[in-house]
Image (cartoon, rainbow, N blue to C red; front, side):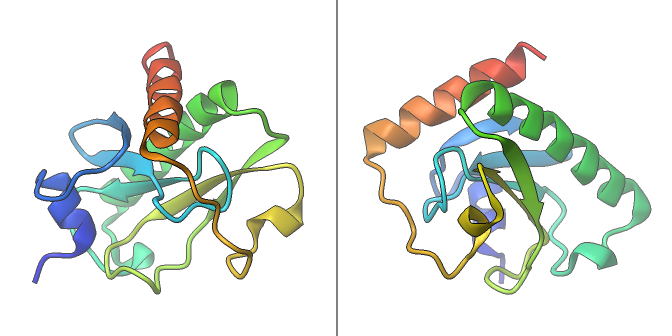
Length: 133
């Protein structure tokens, strides 16, 4: 059965897409820890990050770096953190989380609620930054 991320990649489920290439897609997390919290996902559906073949792994990491640079330009923060957990969705992915300190990157923290318009505005700002790279 396809993961929720595979359904997003196929266009069966909407997302707030911020970037895409032939190998990966990046979109805003709908349960974010901060404004601009994004997920970067390889289009190849593999459950565990370290089960990715080397080429796909390197493509994911390179794309994640580009997306992180775009987020940093669009969202005020001290750093873009990178977290890989992989428990919540059986499809390898990287969390990119804008933060000012370590405490903001705690998945036990309450998630921030944004309106559809706020998500769309943030996604647009990041997408513009990404396209300017």
